[in-house]
Image 1 (cartoon, helix red, strand yellow):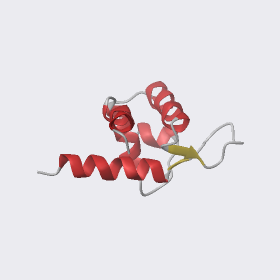
Image 2: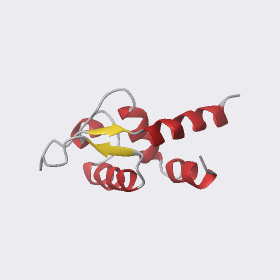
Image 3: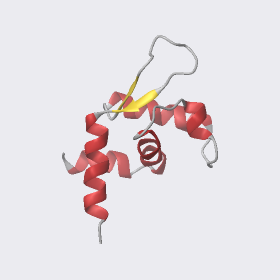
Image 4: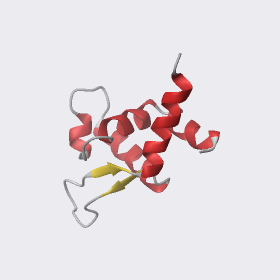
Length: 88
């Protein structure tokens, strides 16, 4: 994975938050906004950006409401690389 790919995730606290929170369980935008400081519009915008770059995917794209998102292999690899880079 290239550094520019990792920087795309690391440049945004919200993108990193989203990847961390969907790595084990599919979630909706509403679920991602619970118990945090991020507004739904910011979550939705970043979900779209992550999906465009193929870090995540919508598992039910035909639903207008309650779309669920899951992490892709590329998203898992990004988290793995970030973990390696941040080990002390």
